[in-house]
Image 1 (spheres, rainbow, N blue to C red):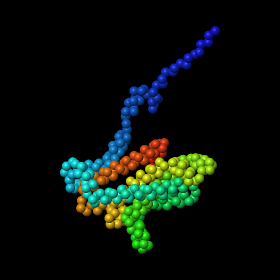
Image 2 (image 1 turned 90 degrees about the vertical axis):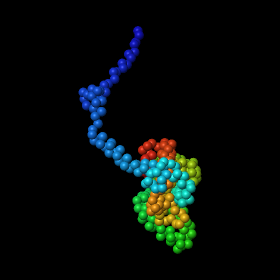
Image 3 (image 1 turned 180 degrees about the vertical axis):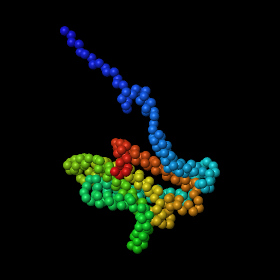
Length: 311
């Protein structure tokens, strides 16, 4: 006696579900094609807002290829303004001082901010909220207030106390630029480690690893994406720091933003737009590297946004 196994019958595909009962697929497609006028208005408004925000950047990029004498007077297309960066000593020195200061300030901010972020993430307590309050105070304090406070403080340290190191222009700029960057790096590192499990560090301690070895081989690799992101962000933040740099700089160490500010009196030249374009490209590259490093570390888009914001 043969027992025939019944084959499961394939069910016919269900008709396309519609937003309302009894609607045919054609009616559904027609319903989807009808967009409310409010969506259209919001889209147009969004495009207009973005155009308004980014139009000045496009203008300054186009003006960097002007071979005329002044930025506002277009003469012809060329690359003379980019060549002036290397041929004019004043521009070359200002750009070099900004790059040098930004690199040193990024290193200082990364070292201090990394240690602070690891301490807040791995040793929680009431002190963390007090320390976060201090970092928040540094973050929200207007730059003009920091500049006015730093100038007499640097003069007091350098001249009254005789600490000659604080009479150096690069040192003054590094100290001023590192204030805000330390807080940024601390937020990033803390946000990175708070979302990481501490069991690896506990396992390392259970295996009798020394605290420094645990820090070097376990904790630091976990925090490395945020550390690199903080370094790149600190460098870009230092490049456009104008208010503090204008107060604490000394003769012979004028950074690029202060040079641009002083050039307003005689009229902006196309080489200023050229340097601004280069700095914009460097900033975009730095932000792209930050996103790439965090993506390689396995972070999602939401994790990248949370780490970048320090949340």
